[in-house]
Amino acid sequence: MIGALGDIHGDFASVHRIMRQHPDIHAWLCVGDVADAVGNYEAFDSPLYWIKGNNENFDRIAARDLPANLHYIPNGTLHVIEGLRIAGLGGTHAPTMYDVAPDQLPHPKKSTAKATELADRRRHFVRQDVDACKQMKAVDILLTHEAPRPFRVKGNDAGKTPINETLAAMKPRLHLFGHHHRLVEAEFQGVRSICLDLVGNSYLLVEVPTLRYHVRS
Image 1: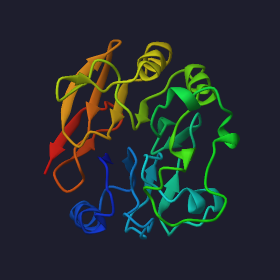
Image 2 (image 1 turned 120 degrees about the vertical axis):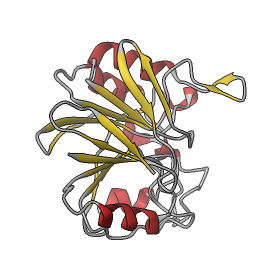
Image 3 (image 1 turned 30 degrees about the vertical axis):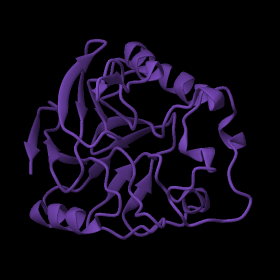
């Protein structure tokens, strides 16, 4: 069994509570937005593997200055966790940034701890990240921050086409995403997809190797 958490946004107390309720689970996944509003992170009781959201301390991620048991999954990379092949495509989609190289995404020249710094374009994914994910095969779980299309928020489609393209090419067994702070179970491109709610509201326990999941609150 592994666990899966939605956006944390500095609600470290909920993460500690959940992990201590499940001491037998030795790996947790998270779909991004771990840092609090000023870019702080905390050490956790069990290993947490996470992709970037749009609210992170990107200087600390770049410097690999992270607390114990917090493991960052860079975009377009594949990791074996508890015997499962896990791929990551974190961050949000910005059409104006999509064709920029990952290491060329603009960001403040001076270090800033503020996790919501809008000038920090490292919060986005780019075409190179998507292309790397599309080449991956036999993936068990794909983690993204953004939703596929259609994903309705207040009547508008908040989903992003590159996520659909990635799902269609990769065909993971399960897709987990966040960003929208609500629990939604759906299917896109023939892939089971779950939008995870805020960590303080609910989380998933996922069976290995079947990937059957259970929603807990």
